[in-house]
Image (cartoon, rainbow, N blue to C red; front, side, top):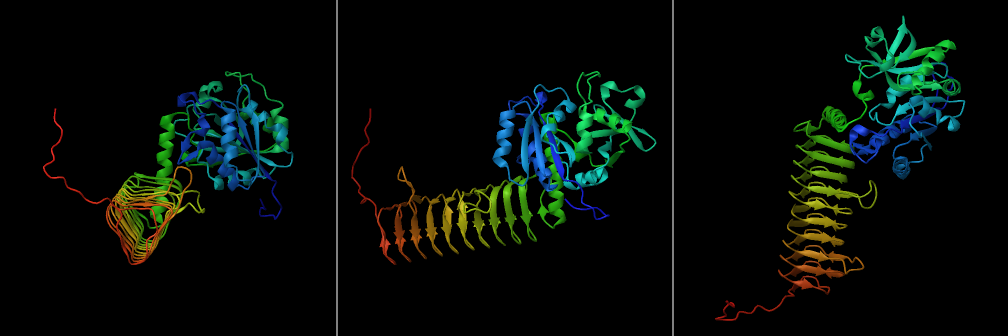
Length: 474
């Protein structure tokens, strides 16, 4: 992280995240910080924000469900910073929690203390807090609440911060204060270590409060400053399923507003879920109850119908995704991400699985499933069909009820359908097999051998009628 207006270099940033709490009110076996908001764990949101700060290291303080929490973060680690874990056992307050991080903190940095259950703090807010600290001051993030119940009050003398008093230790006069401490601070590491060593638990909770360091800073002549914000969503914590749902809606509303400001037409901003990153070009329209996961891009004029779920997919200009379509691409940017070509028509009730690559003007209709298959320009599978591990040429018409039998019980095999082929209804193409260009396969055929170009191929039992036949009767 670089410089301020005097062209000096600011100290490196080390982030400490408190994530040891049990979260009893969640009424769940899952550790609270692993509950999901917008498709990511609460704690993952906080770690991602730390990455946006170009943090030198991130230290996560775990406790309840420590093994599960640490495994989840290690699985998603990006390598952008050093990731440390320390454990707080037992949990004896916020000051006791941060004490556990002291052995891994250098003396040369600014320590930013965050909470693992406060997921929507923004990096630019923290940059202002770090600037307020500047390596020499204790900087607190504060906010005014009409109802400050449960929060530590910020006690000032004039404009100077003198202390933070926890609710249970506050006097009636202090309880009337509306400015509260958010639980987030930036503090010079060397001073933090000295102050942590002086903490005591002489309070109503008999816990070691991190907020006690404010009084130590004042006593030591270290300036204490407050960076006050007005956006309550950034400092909102999650302690119950109700609060989680409220924060989910607040987050999604912000996502919707950002999209609409870019020109996206949303049928109802309250009925949209973005659980990843959604990129939209001009004149995109999205109907109600759509869910976007992972990395999704929508080209110019794409229309998405109601009740679609789209994950890790690139959809080109002019494509129409009809209602109730399910698109589930693989890893973003990988070979399994789904691609839908310009002007394609998908659905309703279609399913595109990992590796589906559809060319321009392809039609995939109701109850058609495509997996690990490429369909060239103008190919159509309009009804009740399965295409797995297939390469389909231009202008192919793939009949209702037809399938590629791609799995022999041990291995997958590929079906190749060359350009201008017509596959009749209710056919089974047993891979590996190639259908020659321009050929026609009669309805009800089961093919096990390659077919020549321009041929009509029929492979089904001879029709037989037995006259005067009677069904058995009791």
